[in-house]
Amino acid sequence: MLKLFNLALLILFPLAWFAPLMRAGLLPLFGLNEISVLSGLASLWQTDILLALLVTFFALVAPYLKTIGLALIHHDLASPRLLPAIHLMGKLAMADIFLIAIYIVIVKGVGLARVETAWGLYLFTACILASLALSILTTRTLRRKT
Image 1 (cartoon, one colour):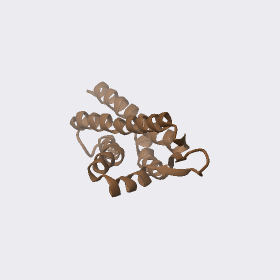
Image 2 (cartoon, helix red, strand yellow):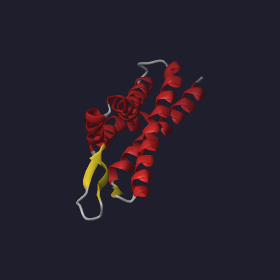
Image 3 (cartoon, helix red, strand yellow):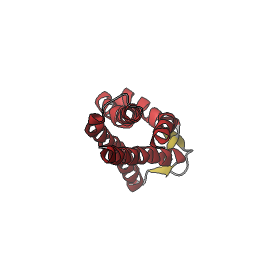
Image 4 (cartoon, rainbow, N blue to C red):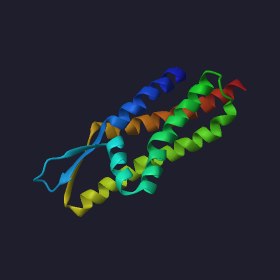
């Protein structure tokens, strides 16, 4: 069952990257623009390349590498000794959720902009948390086998 849930994440993560995380706009008078992980990254690449590299790693690379690593272990294509590195990838992937939450709080606190969370933020968060749970359950399952 862990195999299937993990393989589902290989599809759900890219979907979450395109899904709207939030809708934001200036003042209540103007319309709101939808912001996804990928649209946010596209804006970052134009303004701050170093931050764009970091967010790309935390939001895209780390969670996907973790999911691929778990899939390889589940299908006996990689050694369970990779689990500590996979756990590290999971911790790095949680950092982007924290950053998004901070940005929402800051923008709402300033009062000049209007921000609404969208369904993609919940999907993206669920993918990260599901990935974390899968790695914990995989570790427990492998420990029972040995």
